[in-house]
Image 1 (cartoon, rainbow, N blue to C red):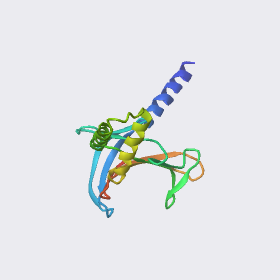
Image 2: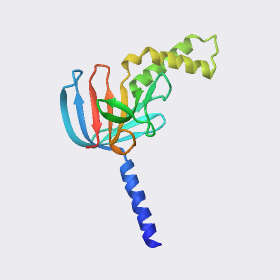
Image 3: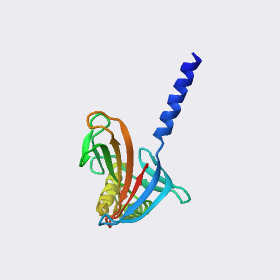
Image 4: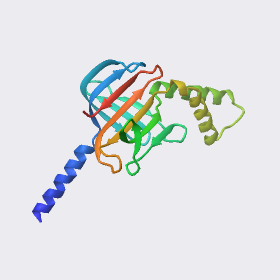
Length: 180
């Protein structure tokens, strides 16, 4: 019985260690896909329902907000349905338009100004949300795109190989985080 409990505890610990989003290598590419710089530094990437938090060792955490909605996110494949991502690499990925704190505050301020200019018209919360979304869509070209990619060792059955996360900026450059 004790042996079974110890084996179970070992498997749970191994699963928890493997599930952490700690990436050990960071590379920056320019818009021509040339490497600008490369560093071996730990970065913890945490994804919640509405945010990505990038915590690089020794730096201030960066928070990006996103909405998992049809026009703001794209999902290709899943753990149960692998897709050919590039060449002969199989797995699944998701792409999200990310909103930085600065853009978020600018859009909120713009929306508040528009609402105050319509002082004789009272808006419902739903109408104010639509106005906020419209103002955000006006700035969609400025938003970075965050891509999460999980690669499988095999084509037809899922077996974890590695993960990549990258942020593509409006100038075409990107920062790629990898686990190896």
